[in-house]
Length: 168
Image 1 (cartoon, rainbow, N blue to C red):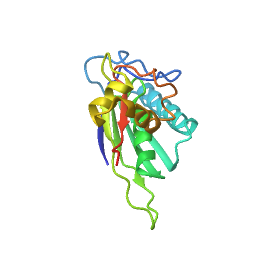
Image 2 (tube, rainbow, N blue to C red):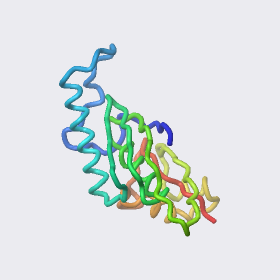
Image 3 (spheres, rainbow, N blue to C red):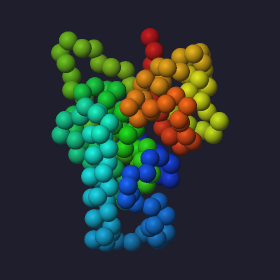
Image 4 (spheres, rainbow, N blue to C red):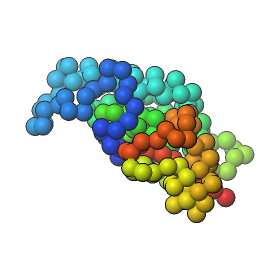
């Protein structure tokens, strides 16, 4: 559990999502329209997670302005991390408050947590692999760890947050 930060203006644009600059600079009491927009974005985020085929039971996402709070039970630690990233890498979301649990199989050892890395201008998966694993040829590990959000090894963008799993 924890709070994860993302770049609010980077990420996948879900149809009809809130504009990052649509809110006034001064804080104001949430209006009924703001609450409706938050509820609609929460529904789109839930549909986005489901469309990616991520395994989480009783998934619930609540949006409050640019913060998404997620509850549910993920099938594994990696699925949990993928859900966090799938939600956080959406334009308009600046933070994800994770309250998910992980289903624990009696015979399985707990899965190690991955490191989250924010892509910078000029990064490639090979460059990131070299930095984290000491070997640029380990880029497929990062690519596989971020499926289904990543569809192409060459399609990453600055501000995107990726999972960097530990390798044995």
